[in-house]
Each structure stands twice: as C-alpha cells, then as structure tokens.
Length: 427
Image (cartoon, rainbow, N blue to C red):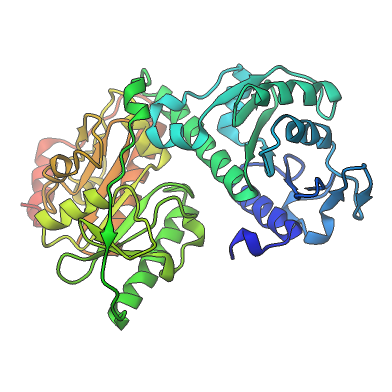
C-alpha cells in the first residue's frame, strides 16, 4: 500500500517492523517519527518492544506539547523536535543502530559516499554530530546543528545514525542505502584499499530517454512473467541481495520487448502492475524503467539465448567491486560451474557504455560480470537461473571474505577445473 494512504501510526509500525526484521536495530533501540502538516509529531514510544510494536503504541505530540497515547514518547523526542525546527522540509526521521553504521560511529568516521554513484545520489551528504547523552537537549542541539549544514544523514559519535526525508519512505530508503554503503566499505576494507570515484563521475548520472510504447492487451504469459519477476525481486530483497532503492530484474518477452523493474520504486513492495514493459528505446507510457534497462536491452540484442538478467549490489560481491582484489570462482565446484570466471571490468557508465559492457557477456563463458564501483550483472536462460547465479555469486564472495582470517586461499587445481568442464558440459 502506498504510504500516502496510510495513517502515521500504521506507517511507523510497518517501517519499524522492517528495520527490526532486517536486524538494523534492536528491541530497545531506535525510534522513528512523522510530522503532520499541522506540526504534530507522531513518534514511536519509549520502552516498548520494537519487535511487537502496534499502531496503538504510537504517540502523538501536538505543537503545544500535549501528548496523545498510552505510552510516553521516545526519550529521543527532543532531537526529533530540534531536527524538524532546523529542517522544515523534513516530514520524517529515522534513528537506529545498524551494525555497520555503528562501526563507523564508534570509530568516529563517516562512510564515503564517493564509492558508489547511486549511494551518492540517494544519501547526498553525511555529517557527524559530537557525542552527548541520549535524550538530552545537548544531543538535540548537536544533531540539529549537523542537519542545519545541509546534511541528509548524521552519524552520532558512539551512538548510531539519524536520517531525514520528505516522508518516512524517503527517509527509510536513504537510511537503508547508507547502511549498505557502510556495510560494503567495511567488507571491502578487509580486502585492501577502498577505491573512490572522482567527483566528475559521481556527478555524471545520465538516464536514457524513453518514448512511449503503444498500448496493447496483456497476455496471460506476460502476466505470469510479471508475477515471477516480483516473486524473485522480493526474495532477493529478503535475502539482502539488493536494497529497496536499487537493483534491476528483467525477463525477455517476444521480439525486442522485455519486462524490467521500475526505477527508485521500493523493491519489497513491487507488484506485477509496476513492472515495466520496454524495448531499447521505448517503454510503457507513464513509467520509468530501472537505470540498468539499457544495458539489459543491449545484452538481449546480442544474446538471443538469454532470457533473464539481474543487476544488483549485494554487499559481499560489491566489496570486491571497491578494491583491487579480484573475486575468484575457483573455490568449490558449484561456484565455478555456475559463475565461470566472473571478471571485474573497470568502472563504466551502464547507460552510455551499455553496448561495450554487453559485449563482455556470454551465456557459457561469461555469465557474470562485476563492474568497479558499480555492482554486478548476471544473465541466465530464465529468471530462476539468473537469480541462482546472483545467489551463488554472493555466497562465493561471502565465503572468500570469511576465509581471509583463516589463511591463504587454496583454489581448485587446473585438473579439477578441466574435469568439471568435461563432466558438466561447460565447453
């Protein structure tokens, strides 16, 4: 359901449940608020289990300070009020303690948005607020001062993070994206020096122009394919293979048409009607395909045997995209059979250099490509095969990172690889 039709109580509970479910806060930690046009602030309560929050638990604080609800408001209410005073355009605030951002908090460092174009666009500016006692007016002053500098995200020294947005959906997406960036940097730091993009590439984010496709009746086959894409997108989100703001799934239709996820729409809430029918130059009227759609179109044109494509930024695989350390699939038979060699390409714009990137793919020899400071793209004969490749890629990357403290990697020898190629018809 669109948040514009939800009562603030329902929206706050739903968002907190999502944050808690994905372990981005604890039973006692974190708080959310929404501001009404009349200045009232709806906020999560103090000392109530975040894992079983109900709409009746949410508290309303009116502009004159009167409270409505069966619980006291969060003890952090003072800084919510101060932030809204400093940034009147904000309609919602997220405060939580996700692991990777807390790691930056306790080291008193800021995650560098310059490692990824999408994160740079969504999160925009991150600032640091000096430590002060939780719930104190002093903490509110310091956070409000950091937001007054134009920041959209503020890391609190030895505490957590606070994110603002035009509404709760906007704030949550920014919060989740920032945690993804922090998580990826933490994992990449175990591999070596983390690579940052130059400012001109961060600022350059072209989007293709799409003309309108003619309307036509939707066939039952297309309806089934739309539903399948949604199921696998939801599954990928739940397994943290992508975040709500990024990641593109597509599947081939007849001729030069394909179905693809829309841009900047919540991946967990994607429905079949929201999937976009597109070609290389056109899409359904009134819709906007994922930014990766042009790359997908170029791959479909080159490789008629490809039936589905996924572009994503899962944290472990993305860590290899941020460093000079290359991901190897020569770890266990499944990884090598499913991924082949999975090369890493230099940073390239997936819009302007779509054809150049597409030329690197081959269903048998190169079904997986990593792009520096961008993410991964996998291809398959159908949606299930493409999704499986994404899963295996992330599982392989995670195993490689887990192996590093144990000792040197021992890859499978050449004769074992030759045996696999013969046994599984890989040539």
